[in-house]
Image: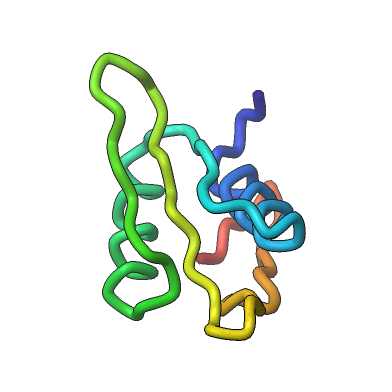
Length: 85
């Protein structure tokens, strides 16, 4: 578990795409929900499901028809002293 949940989200999605997983669990925060909604609206993830009675969200990843991930890279351009989203 990390104190910086947004960076953890990016790493989990990147690793899940590299492993060709169907879904990945991430920690639920308001910022993460808004970011996942943005990714969903842009068509970069299939969907996400907020798990009731748990502090987690299940993110369903989306792939191209040839099996390649839609997201090639996710980078965090931020430092602990200055957050940039």
